[in-house]
Every structure is written in C-alpha cells, then in structure tokens.
Length: 87
Image (tube, rainbow, N blue to C red):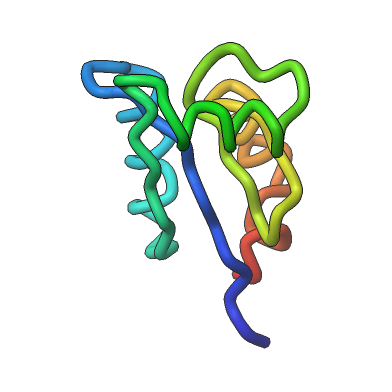
C-alpha cells in the first residue's frame, strides 16, 4: 500500500505544531510542512483548503483535513490514525 500524502500547516513557536510533527515523526510518516507564520499565500491556501481554519496546526491526508494536534492525537488514542496514514 502506498503512503498517503501528508501535509501540515504550522507556525514558528507553536507548541501544538511541534507535538503534531512529533506524533507523525514517531510513526515514521513523511510530511510536507507549510509555514504560515507570516501569513501570506500559504495562509490563504490553508484557509481555502480547510474552511473555518483559524488555528494551526492543520493536518491534511491526501487533501482531506483532519484538524489539529488534539484531533489527530484523539484518532491515535482510538487506534484510528494508523489506517488513515497507511500504516
């Protein structure tokens, strides 16, 4: 099974962003990170791709938004994150 494309929108100095990346790193999941600290094009892209998103991190898997750290951590605790990540 091929690995899905994982993307994460982050800001510098964001503890929840660090925790989300650490969770993904711990699972050996490769991801593309987009820094939206200064706003701009990537921030607008995040808001377009994740309607209503005003906070970071925002994690997407194959283009589907899964929310922030609390959301993916809750999925992980229920054993539902690994299948989403193709693990």
